[in-house]
Amino acid sequence: MILTKNTVLGFAFFLIVTIGFGQKASIKIGQNKIGINQYFTITIQVENERLKKYSEFPGIEGFVKRGTSSSTSTNFINGRMSSTQSLTQNYQATAQGKFTLSPFTMTINDTKVQSNGILIEVGEPVQRQSRRSRDPFDDFFNRSSGPTEYIDVEADAFAALSVDKNEVFVGEGFTATLAFYVAEANEADMRFYDLSNQITEIVKKVKPSNCWEENFSIDQIVGDPVKVNGKDYTRFKIYQTTYFPLTVQDIAFPSVGLKMIKYKVAKNRSTIFGRSKKEDYETFYSKPKKVTVRDLPPHPLKDQVAVGNYRLEEKLSVKELSTGESFNYDFNIRGVGNISAIEAPSTSEAGPFDLYPPNVKQNITRANGRVSGTKGYNYYGIPNEPGTYDLGEIFSWVFFNPNKEQYDTLQSNQSLVVTGGSRQNLSIASNDLGDFYDRIGRVDNSLQPLNGNSWFTIFVNILAVVILGFTAFLLLKRAS
Picture (cartoon, one colour):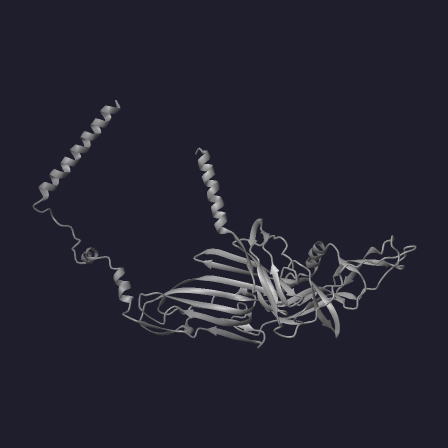
């Protein structure tokens, strides 16, 4: 096949249009009227691709950045998959008043996306505002005179790997957080050092091999005020993830070290020309941690059920219909747990319905130290027999609730009233092969003597033989 210039250009245009429609990037601005203790948000979102890279979120005068949260949504409709991934940047106001977010542009996965900006109004707090802490990593300038002698300032800080649960059931999620804590009274000047490579090595050491992981993807290190044993600290989260144990095996997290740049300061700080501080390093080690994993109680579906805190949200397209008409039924499982591991509800006793495989929709949110979301199943069915049907006898889903330490079942509360005639006879009629096959059983299949038309039959056969012979003669003559 010869490719012309127009063909190549047309194909390239087709690819560009296809990619343009298949992959989308956008920026969404949050509520512009907030209390001073509430976050203002900017969210970037991509469709049908991974959020691989993005430029820095804009700075807003009168606000400070306070961490991010991410979420993903995956849909399976008619065998086709579509997905959405988003990342939200939180901003905290430093004072009440009106502030302007100027128009800005961000690069999301090599696509430049513009936002028009907005006027933000910050009012009275909705509830008591938490104390704002001093950032211990703010740089400071020290002057000294005379001979430069450096001293080591002891750091009032520590690294810790913490978990929100010390004991879980197999399949139950727990969140592990590696963070660096700096006391309010700390006087040592410190900086993070080669953090991306350090985190990569730390994760290799702490990640259990027998767990499903949902990573919170911390992209920016920001501090938030906390109290530890009654003492004020600023916590810098470095790595956070939720693990779901897949086997009954305790999980042991080893001690890991976080290397920091720590400055020694000049003993005589009055010098003007000497160096006020000198770069040094110090490694802070976390303590080992253990999480005990318990087996689930005996149950016929013990090795199949999901573990978590779930509830059912359902929707039935119609309450009454006739046989042969169709209906849609949504069985949505919402809650906290390993959403990806949720299997479809049991429909083994489908009753007098033609029930088709469901379309699947999944949405996962990783925020506030937990993994939550929804997994929905949309069914299409056609009833064949009249009657009143309790869908709870057809659609059910068993799971284990770790809070109650018992198995639970989500069952439909919907009922369907079907009128009209039975479609069984219609099904039989559709397989009727007609009167021709009915006559086969009534016709005598024994040999019969030639009747009065036998001479006509003989003549036709002789004529056919003559025609075939003449045709063969012509073919041989032409070949010679």
